[in-house]
Length: 348
Image (cartoon, rainbow, N blue to C red; front, side, top):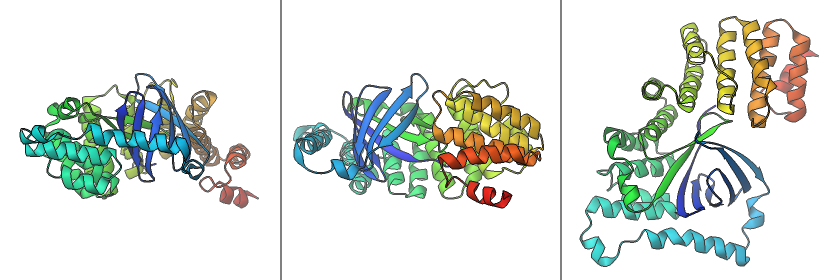
């Protein structure tokens, strides 16, 4: 359960350009609900107000929508807008500092979906915290993680000034980070966003202890932020899943949780895994059963993960019939999920 990324820049009110590894796409809609048209088809996104969380569903294939025609022409025209809006006039360039000129040029290239060209400019803009942040986004887009770490550390050192240059030029930029495979959160150019990106970049290059340091710092700064807590818990589980001390730490981080949102349900999943690691299988089963009772607003992936963990818990308790029942339900929905097929074959 690692992180995934795509970059989104707002071009006009209600219109955004997403920059992902699969290529650029366009978003239409109000905050909290939008439709994105890209190579992979139509993606509908619904957010939970005040949480920064969103959930998506995808239908169709982008190739069907990439042909010419009026719709394609309108999309291309929209995509050209950032180039016009982020262009300094001749006289304005004369009175604008070098780093700021590089920032504007890099932001324009990034918005147009040209990360390679953006990097060339943004490397000259890292004296500006927002320049360092955008340079990190461009480096992450190109999977240059060590370079991204350097830029993010510069942005972190001057975090209080983040957002100022973006605001000056009317740029709304955010990074959508998948905290787990089932849950994503949108982060901006602030300390929270910088630390979440640092966690990802450090994980990618195997610097797990440094990633944990960033996650712990973020949790100290924002102890009530459930997204931040989920990020820390996910990283603890990923790096030291069989360490009993870490399992107890996860239990502390997930104490007294309700099942109010998908984020809480994901935290309950990790709580159950920690309980199972400590041999408390009945307690783990109870946590998972409680999380599974509420389906509204939960993604199919999250429900499958909860049911799979409960199947493993039943198996650890010797209740093979109940374990098989959960595995069969998973198999009926997704026959390729984890090792469900092998487990069912082995039980025959």
